[in-house]
Image (cartoon, rainbow, N blue to C red; front, side):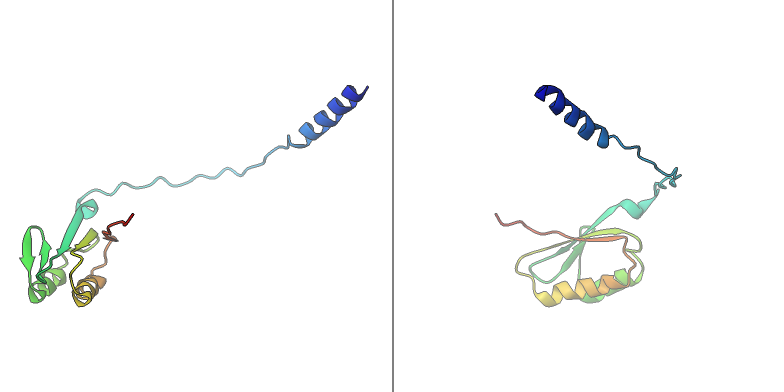
Length: 114
């Protein structure tokens, strides 16, 4: 008799978890794949000597302002790599120059310390 009572309780509890789930039909828009250069990873290296390297060319601050003002990084994915000995001012200069470039993404490369 105890076994029947325990089975009855088990069945009652199990039935309480079987509830109908109602959902709304939602039609989601398809994602559009972007075609073109907007997905190309552009890499900027801040060198120990103070220069800025981009596309295998070294730039001074004046030259860098010129290339950024031409819209080189418009809607682009940009990665910034820096030597550990660069000055904070140089890093801020590069970030400020890219601020008005309407970047798609900006990534800072870091070295994880374990």
